[in-house]
Amino acid sequence: GDAQAQAVMDRFAWWVALGLANLANTFDPSRFVLGGGLVEAAAHRPPIEIVPAALGERAGAIGAADLARRAGS
Image 1 (tube, rainbow, N blue to C red):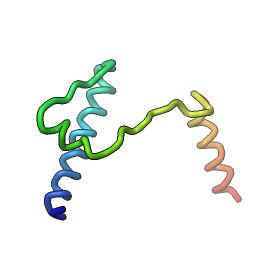
Image 2: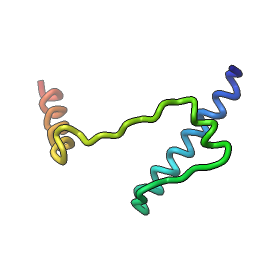
Image 3: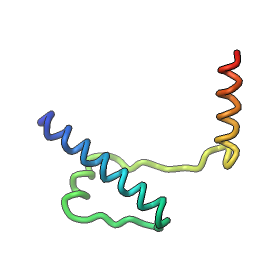
């Protein structure tokens, strides 16, 4: 319940997530295995589901077109 400790852990988790994202983009692994205290520290949060966009590969283009349309009105 310590606010400062929670802030430190939040910042640490942000950096770990950034590092894992960079590794995933660089090496395209099928799995990350985390051990030690890191796993126990993250166990308080439910897993996050990652799903493909409903619009598939067109999602970015459709979003950009919608944004341009809204900016023009």
